[in-house]
Image 1 (cartoon, rainbow, N blue to C red):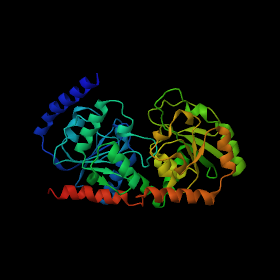
Image 2 (cartoon, rainbow, N blue to C red; image 1 turned 30 degrees about the vertical axis):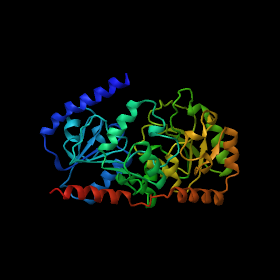
Image 3 (tube, rainbow, N blue to C red; image 1 turned 180 degrees about the horizontal axis):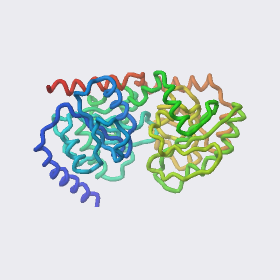
Image 4 (cartoon, helix red, strand yellow; image 1 turned 90 degrees about the horizontal axis):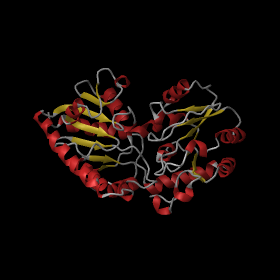
Length: 378
């Protein structure tokens, strides 16, 4: 079955060569985030830097299923529509965050920059978890088409180049454009979150952002005792507290009706949630890397830890920036015993050991590279 799928990829790729009759538009830049489902992540922050910094002589195209999310002067096309194939195969530069389709016949004169959607190297990905030759062959085809892959640390460079068959010279060790937000004044981002959820200005936020499992029986919203957590936080730091939960995009959310609990599934920008949050509760999600750049408390809540082996992770659990909790009771104790001085030491050592590239200039660096690619052809 997998062999048949790979043959279909090759056939589709051959058919799509028909778009080669259209010339590459030398000033056209194409953006896609999570297969057109979101205006988000690194592509969003690169796009907004370009829009703000450079004039209108460049043509911007977004793959988006909802066209009302972007600037009115920017084109939007639906994923896998005829116009999607036309624009992506005639753009000078392609910006993605979740690997383009392996059947896209990217031309040699096109530049494909993969920005990826995770900043850290915690749970294993790529060939370390692929179960079939089909998956490995497909990702190898994609990596061969890449011009660059953005990395946030030396350890990410190592694990991603090995796991996705990326040649080392293709790595752009700039940090992630979406993380530039943590290195500048970001009052607007926090205000956006508070206005969206109609929160009082004195309310503190704990953000719960678990990732997905490869088995379906785990329910992250049932695993966490949310009301007990809020009570413990109020005990530790008196005042108003709320919990905002943002599950991984492939997890089906449930609607919770608790007081002071909010579902952020439709909030457009995760980075703004990270800016607004006072505390992050996650598990082994790479979101902890992004949040750690602010040096705010991270608690890794993993009650199903017995389902994982040490070699399921790139980074040993004890070296994560977050404080590990295997039960609600342990989570509460870790909050009570939280020592800010020791925590800051732990996070700084994590950044040092991984050789962090995030310094707040990624959007600028990558945008300049994009413009260089466009201008060199004029």
